[in-house]
Length: 202
Image (cartoon, rainbow, N blue to C red; front, side, top):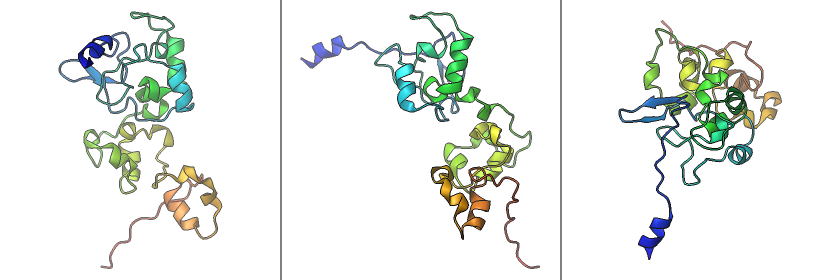
């Protein structure tokens, strides 16, 4: 019985469409999504993006780093079947509104810059966890902004992830030093210098 049911479910042989290989890398056998393809947030809600950009194959996985799920058609074309020609208006709308759902994070302003030529850390070895770590964020914003999606922040970041979840912290009495050090972007404190680490007496 299970064998018969398995025949009714089509086997998904997904491959990223050759008509738009943006934010993908070749892994030796075929193209897969890069680490920056779906590493941002959608501008519109995920619920909206998942409805507006329905995959052509309902069994296809969602776009994610390292997989080869086919992009939803409306991300890059106005056609209704593959192959369909690339449409720049459709693609621009997807990048502006639902970049994560469509696997276009690497094309957003957050990733449109260059890493330093001689960074303090090897940007190729930077992990997502490092981009989120308070210990690494400032260094990576300065040296590896294209790797972490910090290009549009001009080096001014929140060292603590989550400041934006409670903007009232910006005006809380007694937390000024914490805010000036850790929530600079959210609280518009970019002009406030960060404190240098304490150095031992000589």
